[in-house]
Length: 307
Image (cartoon, rainbow, N blue to C red; front, side, top):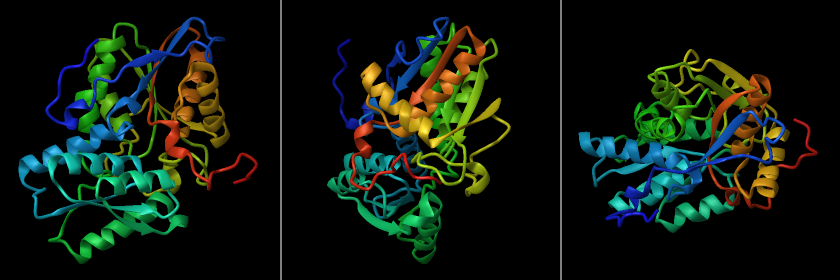
């Protein structure tokens, strides 16, 4: 298919393909497992959808204007999206990120003219949230703070986009949807859209098995600042995944499927395969959140660490 000519990079967001996983799930021949390739968004991640929706909605209602700086906390991918769309649309962007996020993400966001403010690396994404609130409170007239963790435009992007696309692609056979919890926007928005289908689709949220984990971008809700957009009653089930399982599966996806994805994507697929093993027959869709090259860094989590 030849893509149409675009007037702006923002028009490239969405309409991502999905691919069937045949090798890592070959022991479940009666279950189709599809991976929706969200890393094919222009910013390289699923976060492009939410970032653009939050920006467009704020521009439309006057909260984001050219005299304000968009600022938010992020572990990386949302920040990349803000940076790209800020440059394309003509808005200044500042990001609060944990100091230990990968150098690649720092370099990418700075390439688009974004200002970086670092939070305590030991406090993770929650520390970045606390830091951005301090900055905005000190200069309320200087910044527009979309707050991806509390902004209803975040799940709205997935209700209008991701969920609709999944139904168009495999809605006639879909039995289960599986995805991880971070801001929770993907799970909340997609699940609400799938609930409108004519038959039952079981929706399963994935989270790290414990508070100390190596699955960047994912939240262990019991030990974290819970995003206001998160509603624990929306998923049919919450499944815990170990860090090792997410890392091992991301490696297997590279070696066996030719898909180089991040570790949260590995966790999603590991959970999807567990679902496939349990149901024996059906169709499961999960999300490839971002590309694996985002995690090329000298300071990497090693499997021999004990949390």
